[in-house]
Length: 245
Figure 1 (cartoon, rainbow, N blue to C red):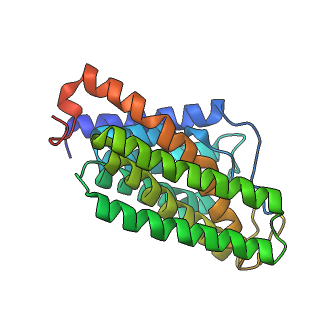
Figure 2: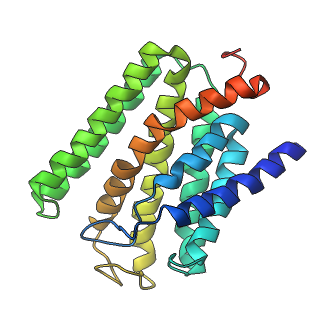
């Protein structure tokens, strides 16, 4: 790892924690609680695209740990280390890895189709067991398909962004999956903070946490990150991946 990478990990972690603190509105996932509304995901995503997977993943892991430990975070180190840290590392590592590859439309179409089907199925299941109201289902699915449309539209308009679009969907989906199932597993042994079920959350709560995390964070990743990164490429051309040059 280069010296600049180590430095950027520190900068990314600090900015992630600071922006997370400043943008914390006190909103947590409905019904199940715990997971915050978190627009600050744009910070590690930008660093992941500019400096690669290790900077993106490590900076996000350190930054979320700091954010969890500082008020108004939950302050539970074990919960952060077992759920928050690995979910952020994996999610932003994948964004940094895939966004710098020149992916073709076939792979993008397959991945978007699988991801959309999985999230639609989970949302439908939660509606069928009366855990989500119809208006919430419509909102979540509207956000999902609007973001898929944005990914495809931006990729057609600016082909260099099609890989990032897929990377943001895959990375966030994997991170959201770790959060959802990680919180459920944690609750089987220890109490969760600010949760409807402090202990022994039902298995379907995993899907609630997963869908909430993905639906509330993907709009920020697909709309805000690309223009900021583009500005950085113009200011510092050496940061652009080879296929963009």
